[in-house]
Amino acid sequence: MNEIMELFQGVYQAGRWPVTLYPIWLRSSLTYIVPPAFAITVPAEALSGKTSWVVVLGAAAFAVVLFTVTRWVWNFNMKTYSGASA
Image: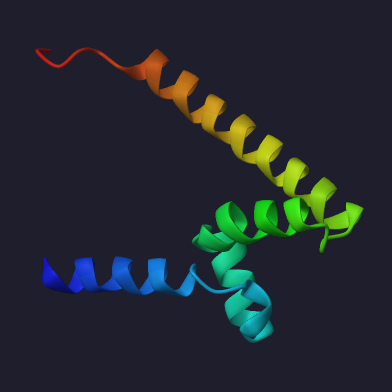
């Protein structure tokens, strides 16, 4: 269990710094696979005026895609759910 906690702490620590400090492969991983950079860096850059409209539109499109996939998974699982006592 300590290894999992250590992994999450490492990801959270990586999210503390601007994503532009990291190499492109790590930047992409922290933005799209494990999204602390998406949740922290994109809004902070948007508020400070350091981002472009392409990034803002990409972030909005990414949020819409994630919302759509989440709704689809939720509805699919609710259709196949038979109850906890069954």
